[in-house]
Length: 198
Image 1 (cartoon, rainbow, N blue to C red):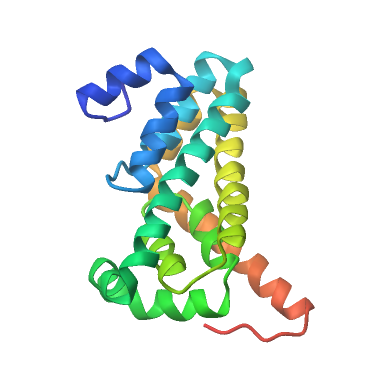
Image 2 (image 1 turned 120 degrees about the horizontal axis):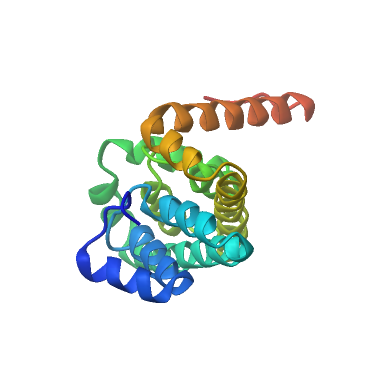
């Protein structure tokens, strides 16, 4: 795991625990700490090392992220809008409008987008503005599960090349995923006859 930057104590846990270590990293990253792209890199690296366990690693990453997000969701729900405004800063108003008009998508789209796109601000907004917990959990599991499973498949298929590519083209990958999702969203609104709002 040479390419993954983690605190020494957490690096040791991941080395010993494997999937359990991924769960912990994903939990911390989605709640109290921030390790941009580390969970993704761990999924890719461990899937390369043990391809047969790839679905397990992806599942642990998704469930760990879900657990961290639920903790943050309830914290925001209890803390209220003042807490959200303080943590969200300049993104607060845009996040609020998006959440209020797109409950499921407000969780699904940020959960599938890789760094550097913001994620926690939407989790906080979902808690503050009372997105139903069932919808929140479902959107997170689908979004995170899809993201990590695609990374795992690419890792098994292309090996270290995919990790090097993603780490050296991080912004380009994020923009591409965002553009694809935006097109799908606009197309679905057009098909349903409901105009999209920016």
